Image (cartoon, rainbow, N blue to C red):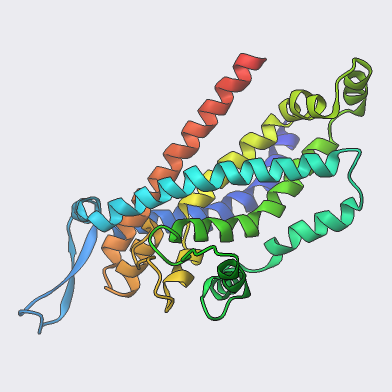
Length: 296
């Protein structure tokens, strides 16, 4: 028993050291930083001093309309993006797993390739495709009588959702496809013998057996959605877009830190966003846990 304990300690120590260095310490520093602010003396002509302000930065962030509206944007983004991502990735995985599919390896690679493109490059590509007088897509839409401004207040959110779908659909499809491949083929054969058709097998047999993967992807997608930053930041730069510099909470924190040099406010906004992610992660985990308990 002692030998096993020592072995476990040796194997786990590097993980906990790395976890402490890249997670615990930065979060602790952010919390500490959020309790202070820098103030200038002498009507702005004197030097700056760091002053302990307690929860004032949190009050300022929560009292700022731009910060609160950022969470509204995130809510709309999640309501639009998450169902489309889960349904699209699962549908593609089911299609590739079906007996009718051909050239599976080719389509797996083709669908996964967009994920290999860095997010900032993907956003730049789509900004080009969204820009009138430059984009062949916009030109083709206008030729077909379809007028849509991707940078307008109504079009900004769908534009960002489209970029995110292009980046992550293939990645999550691979996860679902791997889960479908792990299903015992004898179960599918038994369903076929019982007279179940392809649609019935897909939605009554396969989907229930990959619920764990659905829950995992859903949880990671919720967390990733709250960190929305790169795509709207690129749309904000020089495109005349409705996306502002405080469009999401992450952009609000970025603007507070690097445009206004208010690191305390930026840290407070980041901590509030992290708490929101933790609460949502807990809620999703509890919800999926209860669903599993009911179906067990």
